[in-house]
Length: 126
Image (cartoon, rainbow, N blue to C red):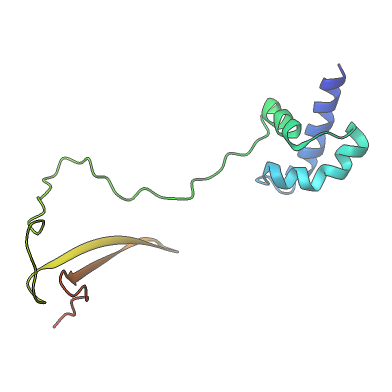
């Protein structure tokens, strides 16, 4: 009975803050509420606080911090590495290229790089 009252008090405090900041995370909530929790509920640790949030369904899911841009297992032909056993002795014998993705405010843009394999200097257009 006491545990239920404790979890109801915690969820009321959390919902009061989430009314204004709906995506605030558990760590920051615990830091903001630690004094109120000690006064009203009779203090407990961060892990117990997270247990109560989990039971009440009040944890916020984290967003992914990365975007998967490469899909290596596709149906298109993959060329073999023809430079694997070659010995390069001077510039302009072989060029390698790569593509990378850059995030902008409008979305992703692609950057294509072409480099001399021997000197590792970028190829400048003529």
